[in-house]
Length: 323
Image (cartoon, rainbow, N blue to C red):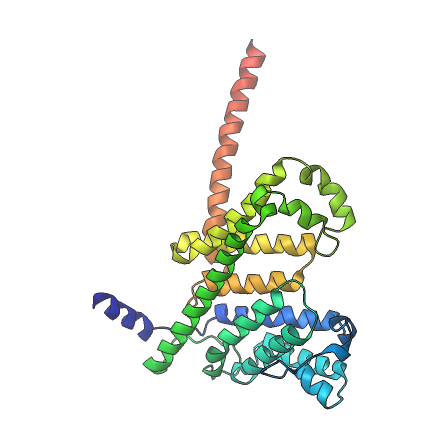
């Protein structure tokens, strides 16, 4: 009973209309926007647009309708770019939320996708859809200090956000556990094969620089660290706020590293947006101060170690010159 009263009190003050939710939506929309900006439909449908099949699709995609009514796919792409731009700038979430999901769904279902990012974007944009429909603001960047809406509405918002967090938890947990079933990941050689892959792998100049590391025994440690880190991100769902801060910063750096190494930009942005809604308190605005404890910890530890090493070096040099 006490727990239920505490939960009721928490929900009564629940206010997700902060920039955490806004940044999540904007990054999620921006990732798909980049895909459409830098890839024409000749690339997205490089296996031939004539092969867009809609017979077994329960919900026809935008490209199914375009094919049915002989509309050029490029027109659909430009229309999607316009709508996603509105999503990114935050205009009228109540109107753009449904279109955002439908665009992600259309690309995932009809276009040629290879890294799984579009599938995650489709799921997340669908799960956040009820929140956008309940968002009456003109722009999702307009922060509300207080949420004066009904308790029922707050309850729906709370449980939807909780479901999204659970979904991201499942993504990371499943990614780690599935790797353990894979022979290459279990043996610690998967990173070597992955980075050497002609599609997903490193560019040739990076591969030449990384080859000494990739061909060393240390690659086993790196491969296992990826799995352990994803388990850590999954476990962070039940951690305290300090651990969540550390996990969020490290998770963002991890996906930025993936973006710059193997170039799957849209996937990286999608996962960064997922981490933000997963690990950052929805009722708090994102500020640099929120991450400062981690950097302060690194600074203090580094400073102490530097002083210790420096002090020992001075003692050693003093003895050396006086001997």
